[in-house]
Amino acid sequence: MSMVPDGTESKLVSKESDHDINNRITDEAVLVVENTVSPKVLYNDRSPTDKLWGIIYVLSYITFLATGFFLVAKSRVRFETDEFGQKKISSFFLEDVQQCCSKSVTKFGLCTYIDDNAGGNRRLAAGNSTFVGDEGIFDAFLDAPHIIIGVFALILAIGVTWVVALRFFAKPIVILAEIAKIVILIIMGVYQVHVSAKVVCWVLAALFVAYDIWARKKLMLAAKIIEYSTVAMKEIPSIFVGSIVIKLLFAGNAALFVYFFTESFDVVEVQSYEYEWNSVVSTDCTFASPNYVRGISSYLCLSYLWTILLFDKMRLSVIATMVGSWHFHPQDKPTLVTSLKNIAPSFGTIAISALISSLAEYINRILNENAWYWWISPTIIVALPIHILSCCFGTCFKTLVQMVTKFALILHVFTGYPFMASAKSAFQILSRHFKGGFVTEVTSKSVLNLGSYAFSIGIAMITWKWIDDEFDCGTLSDLDTGFSMWFILYFIVIMFNLWYPILGIYVIILLNKYLQDDGAASVERGVESMNYMWIPPIAATFVGCIAMLIFQFLSSIFLDIIDTLFLCYAIDKDNNIDVTNDEFTGIVKEVTTFTESESSDEEQN
Image (cartoon, rainbow, N blue to C red; front, side, top):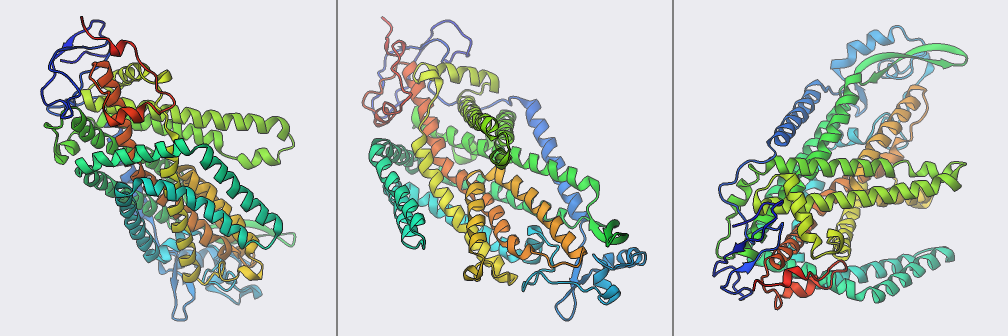
C-alpha cells in the first residue's frame, strides 16, 4: 500500500517474502517515512497520465511528417548531367530559366548554363572538383546518397559494438580511455613540427597524468558504477533489446530529418535578381527558395529536438520499468513487451518531460551561441565575463532540468503518478539521502561521453575523406600545398560542434546556408567558387553531430540503469529496508552528494 506524494501520515507496508533474494529485509512490517512510495513498480493496468501533452506531441509530430513530406513533394531536381558529364539545367526548370534569361544582358548566374558563350562569360568549376560552385552539403548528400547510407550503417555497427564492449569490459574500458587521452597527446607532440606545439601537447599530457593521479578514486568509482550497471544488463538481457528497438526508431527519425532537410534545398523556383556591375544595374536569374521553406525548416529543427529527447525519455521509461522491478521484486518482473507497451499510458508524461528538457536545451543553446562575437567585440572586458556567466548559467540550468525530469519520470514509472506529482515526490525522497536532492556522478558520464566523442570524430573524418574523394575536392590530399591551416581550422570546428551536437546541427545548417549563398553569388559573378574547400569538412561535421547523438543515446543506457538504482536505493532507505550488505550501498556512499538520513534508519517501536 503506497502513499500519495502529499500525504502526511505514516503507514505500514507489508513486504512480500520474495522482495529481496539477498535477505535485505525482514518479514516484519516496517515504518514508511512521510511523502514516500512503496518499494515496487506498478506496471500492470496503467492508466494514461498527462494526456493533453501526449495529444499535443502527436499533433506536433504529424505536422513534422506532413510538412516534411510536403517539402519532398515540392522538391525538384535542379540540375541534370549531360552526355559529357557536365551539369545542365533540368528539364523541369529549363523553360523557366530560358524565359528569365531572355531578359538578362550579362548572362551570369543560371544563364551561363543555357548559353556559355553569351557576353563572353563562361561557367567556372570549383577548383579541380566536380562541384559547379553553388552547391552545399545537402547537395553533396543528394548527389552521393550511398555515402549517407554507408556512414549510418557504420554508426549503427559501432554503436552496438560499443554497448556490448561496455557490458563485458566496463572497468578496462574506463582505464584505457584515460590512457588513450595521454597517449594521443604524446603522439601528437612527436609529430609536431614546431617546438612550441610539441611543448603544448606534452604539457597537456602531463596535466592529464596529474589529473588521473589526483582523481584516481573518482575514476575507479566511475568504473564501479558502469560495471555495476552491467550486472542489471546481465540479469535483464531484454534491457539491451528494448534499447536497441528505441535506438532504431531514433536512427530512423534522424534519417527522416536529414532526408526532409536535404530535400528542402531542392524546393526552389527561378527568380530574377538585380545587381550592379561596372556601375550598371543588370538583371540575371537564380534559384531561390520560397519564403515558406525557411519557416518549415525552422519547425522541423524544433520538432526534431523535441523528438530526440522524447526517445531519450522512452528509453529511460523502458529501462526504469525493468530495472526497478528487478530490484524490488525480482520474482515478478515485466516482460520486454509489457515494458514497451507501458510507454503508451505514460506517453503524455514522457512528452511533457521531453518538452521541458527541450526548452532547457534551447535556452542553453541561446546562451552559448555567438561566442566568437564576445572575443572580437571592443567591449570584451565587460562583455566576455557576462557571456561566460551566461554560459555557466545555461549549462547548470540544463543539467538541473534534465536531472529533475529524469527522476520524475523514473518515479512516474514506479507509481503511475502524473508528471508534477512525480517530480515533487522524487525531489522529497532524494533530498533525504542526497544533498539538495541532487545525485551527481559526473566521472562515469564523462567516460561514456569521451567514448562517444572519439567514435564521432572518427565517423566525421571518414565522412570527410569519403566526400573529398567522391567529388575530387583534394582537401585532404593537398595538405602539403597550403591547405594545412584550413585543415586545423576545420578540425577545431568539428571538435567543438561534436561536443555540443544539438547546437552543432543548427550551427552547421546556418553556416551551410551562408556559405552556399556566397558560393552561388560567386558563380553568378563569373568568379570561381571555393565551395570544394568547405563542403567535405562541414558535411563531415553535420554527420558527426548525428553520430554523437546516437552514441550518446546508447551510452545513456548505462546511466539510466544507475539513475534508476539510485532512486531505488532512496526508496529502500525510506522504507527501512536493510541495505547494509548491498554492494550498491558501498557505491552510493562514495558519491559526493550522499548524506545519511536519520529518519530512514528509525524503526517502529
